Image 1 (tube, rainbow, N blue to C red):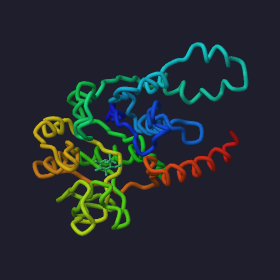
Image 2: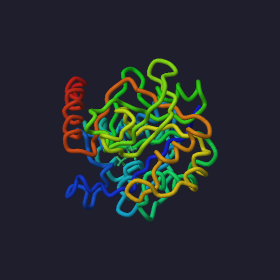
Image 3: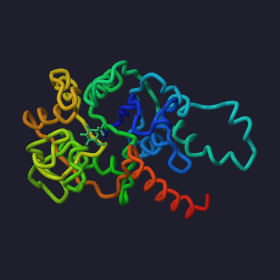
Image 4: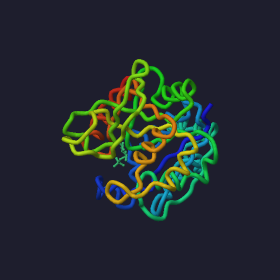
Amino acid sequence: MIKKCLFPAAGYGTRFLPATKSMPKEMLPVVDKPLIQYGVEEAMEAGMNNIAIVTGRGKRALADHFDVSYELEHQISGSSKEGLLTDIREILDDCTFSYTRQSEMKGLGHAILTGETLIGKEPFGVVLADDLCVGDGDGVLAQMAQIYTKYRCSVVAIEEVPHEEVSKYGVISGSALEDGVYLISDMVEKPAPDETPSNLAIIGRYILTPDIFDIIRETPAGRNGEIQITDALQTQARKNMVLAYRFKGQRFDCGSVDGFVAATNYFYERWKELGD
Ligand code: G1P
């Protein structure tokens, strides 16, 4: 059973300026919830109730969001608005939150390594909150936890992307072990379309075994001069094994305006159905 989930959330969110000038990009709301809350709910659903967040300068709103706001609660107590805080209260009752700060932006691999102090020596999930995922049935992390339970190795979530878009992602190639599960033979961070091993792109959900920390420590800077988790996973795949899992469901790239608007439309429909 995986108990911890790491949220690298120190990035500047430059693609959403000026909205993210003084507000963390993880706090951008999709309908009525900030992006990171969707990710935390997905982790909770997968049984990962220890939430570890790697923050940075200007990210205090994240810690405030996952805390009680006595004044606000007092103000709306007994009113029709009280119900709006039910979900977040459940999260606060069921989860613990811990934080550490990444003082330099040196890539996703470096952000994950910064979280080591919160994770220790156990397998853990990783959620990149700007990839907003909706599972068919189980959530994507819960699906991945089942794959981990069976194979006991690191697992990355993948989806097919149009060939010309591979350079936005880490890309894998491998052989199918079972329906939707691949044994990775090669991984490349943001390849050019004419050099890509496939069009199977890694999306922002990972389950990692803790030996990844020592591997990241030994991983030199790669694409864009940053320490890439994809490079560390490639080493882990050679030493041991790493799986790619084609998740069942849908993912919105909320780091882009198009994806963000698509997610908003999708959740707006759901919100209307629920009659909120
Ligand atoms: C990161 C990873 C990349 C992965 C992507 C998923 O890239 O480095 O391998 O495909 O997340 O969202 P970023 O989007 O931070 O540039």
